[in-house]
Each structure stands twice: as C-alpha cells, then as structure tokens.
Length: 82
Length: 423
Image (tube, rainbow over all chains, first blue to last red; front, side, top):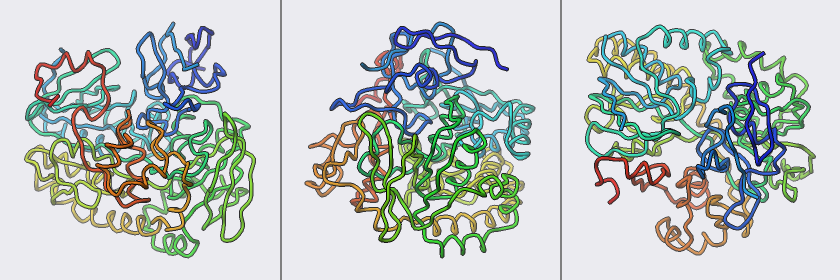
C-alpha cells in the first residue's frame, strides 16, 4: 500500500494516498462541488486532464489552481468555492 | 528565472513525445521533455509509469528511463517571447526553455458537445472520468453511463469496470453499420492491441448501444439521471456518473502560437514531421487523430529527423503509411451525426467558463462578434472546450491564439525578461 498523507480541504483533514491529485482530496472530503461558475452554478471536473479549468480551487492561497494536475503535498491547504 | 537549454526540446510526454525523446537521445544530443502533467505517459498511459497496462507501455517507459532524457513535469508552456525560447509556468514559478530544435507532441483532448445538464457535477468526459479515477477518485460501486463516440468509450468502460464501477451501458452515437465496417477494416496490430485489453470478456455483460446518445442530464446540484435517445425511443437512466466524450480533437494552441500552418484542424507536417516553421517538428495526435501506433511512429520519425538522421527516418515511412490508413478509418467511423447539433436548447450553456448560452451565441454569425459581445471562449480554458463544440454546432473555426496560451499568474508575466509577448 502507498503511504498516506494529510491535506486540509475547507478546514477538514483528508487522508489521501501519496501521489494523489488534489482533485482526489476534494472528492474524498465530500465537498459538494469544486467551484461556482460566473452565474453561480456548482461545477466539478470535466476533462480530468487540465484543459477545462472546471477543477479550479485555491491551494495554499493560490487561487485558480487546477486540482486535477497538481499532486497533493503534506499539509496543503485546499479551498473550494462556497 | 530558471533557464535550461536543450538541443532538442519536446513538448508532451505521451507516446509521441516519449518515442521522439528516446530516438533523439540516441544521437547523444541534449534532450528535454516538458509536460504539463505530473508524470509521463500522456493521457493514454496516464499514471501508468509504475504499473504499465500493456507490454507496449512498459517498453516505452523503460526505454525513456534508460535514455538520457531530462524530464520536466508539471510545466505548462504559455509563451514564446523570442525565437528558440519558450516560457513555462510551474506551480512554483516560471522556467525559460531554450532550444535548437523543437518537437511538438501536444496530443489531443476530448470533444465535448453541450446538452441540457452537461455542466452538472457528475457529468465528465469519458477519458475525463478515467483520468480522475487514475488520479485516485474512488469509483467502486458507482453507477456509470459511458456515452459519446470513439474507441475510447470501450477502453474507458473496461477500465472503470475493472476498478469496480457498475457500467450500466455504453452509448455510441455512430451507427452499427459503420462500426462493423471499422472492425472488418482493422489491421492485425490493432486487433492484437484490443485483445490485449481483453475488452470483450471485460465488457461481456455491458450493453453497447449504437446510434444512441445522451439528450439531457438531470439533477439539481449533482447528476442523478440521464435521458438517452436511440431512434424514436427516449428513456431515463439513473446513474452517479455520465462519462461522455465525442472522440478527440488535436491540441493546436502551441503550434498556432509558434506560427505553424494548420490545415483542416491539424498541424501540417512534411515527410520528416517538420512543420511549416524551420526547426519545429510535430508528431502524434496534433497532426491528426490517429491512435497509438501512428503517434509512436511519428514520434520516432521526428526524433530521427530533428537529430539529422534522415536515412533512419525514411525507413519508418512505410510503417507510418500503414498506421495512417487506420487513422482514416477511425475518423470516418466516428464522424459526428447531424442530429447532435440539435442537442443544445436555447438556454443550454455552451461556454462553461463564461456561462454563455446557445441563444446568445445564435445572435451572432461569427466567432469574433460572438466573443466581443458574449465573452464566449474568453475564459480560463480559452475556448479549448467550447471551441470544438461551436465549430460543430455553428461552423465557426476557433483559430485566434495569443500569448499567454494558458492563463498564468501575474507574477509569471512579470518574471518574463521580455515584454513583447503582452502586446
């Protein structure tokens, strides 16, 4: 089994296998969506490979980071839209 | 800023890029591959470096491992401030990548077609859902409808099933007659590849419906069901995920930025995979959707050609011709049917970045006017999703490309030594 590490998603501790993408941590956190669209719709990843930008979240204060393409690091702070 | 010079710089670490790198590295020149993804393998071999799914994947991973190739991951090229120089953004900052010869192996993405409800969480690409599962999304016990078009649907369904998903059905828009012709026309090598995937036994109990496609996804904040249509029949299927993609389209943005000529939605290349721009080569799906074999052979040809080994490149031309025949067959088989143009309703969102509806687009008669009035295609994805859809729905070609070709942080722009890119 791969080692696990812990990231924070919306202030909640989530344990993920090492090598997981940030998108996985967001899914596992139970967050209902990743972002709100410009008209307020709930959105979640579409393409899974960094093209569509629907997976955008805030990582360690950096807004608009693509969670599908960024590997989890220990202690990362991840925020989805409300 | 971190500067790195390469004799041969390759953009994209999928099959074409890896084949180009391994081939070019034999000439003892300095070879670098840069890729936006965190690991090599592109999309078809995404996340397989430690556990390759096929002997072929294993072979190319180990060749790439053994070759002296510098691999830069998580780096996305966004600008070309001067000839022979590219800028890439990583999570931690900007890299300058200078080169003598450049090989573009930027691959393809899925084509998405808008239908009511396609923006709901739970509706993903077909390859999209596979990529998410490869990245760690738990899928065990989840009910999945796989829909759209292309050979990817079967492969995705088989993969998800192996991971414990319940595949309710596969809906392929192409008619059965064309699929049959396709399977009769297949070449030996591809049949072998299919057998290796063991699709038949894997998917034995899963209904494959041809001439069938989704017309609406339902749910309030998340997908709960999908309406499918086949002939005159329309019915509802409850599911957790709708994995839906309509074949593939080439990633052309970087080639376009560099001024490479693009013909019929593909980068135009000569015999040696050279583009219309000196010292820039292109291999793989960006030259036309052709599948794995064509990508590998084009990558090898580009690797030989870029290192001046034209004689070795020539020896591969016949293999490339064979692979191209498969490519032609593929694209005829999975051509989109006109009925799909009627999928979006007037209030269906076409541009997901800017939430532009179909009726707002229909008030215009070309891209430029639509962009100026609605911002369609001007959000973060810069038309990568809606561009192919609008081309199919309205016949407008999305061709204008300007740096930065991806949204970047202001700090990345500020860090660039040359400012002419922000013109």
